[in-house]
Image 1 (tube, rainbow, N blue to C red):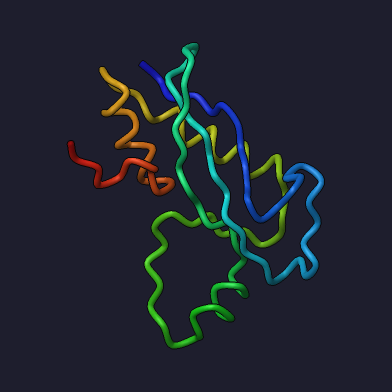
Image 2: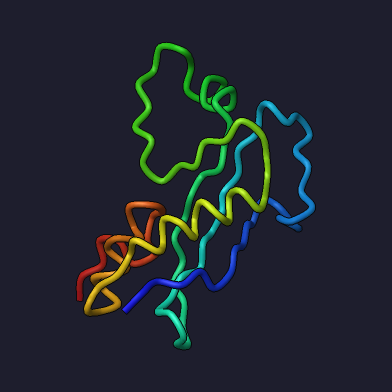
Length: 118
């Protein structure tokens, strides 16, 4: 079984494909990557902060230690390059079950069911 990118969504950016940051060197926004089993119905959300190095500096300061989990750090905004990087990552996310695959995808973005227990 393989992971498949179903769609991208951002509550912060109306149109991801045509988005042009106000300051191309300093921006950050939440990107929700919707992923599901390849060729099957269904998707789950994985949250990623897309940002520039200067945004990190401005947000956390120069002396802070930032653990880069669930971040995609870019020098400038390029929608297709971000999609390509996500797809490249997802090609490595295979497994016998969806929960095994989702565990691997959650290294990229915070899984909506991360930490969930019945």
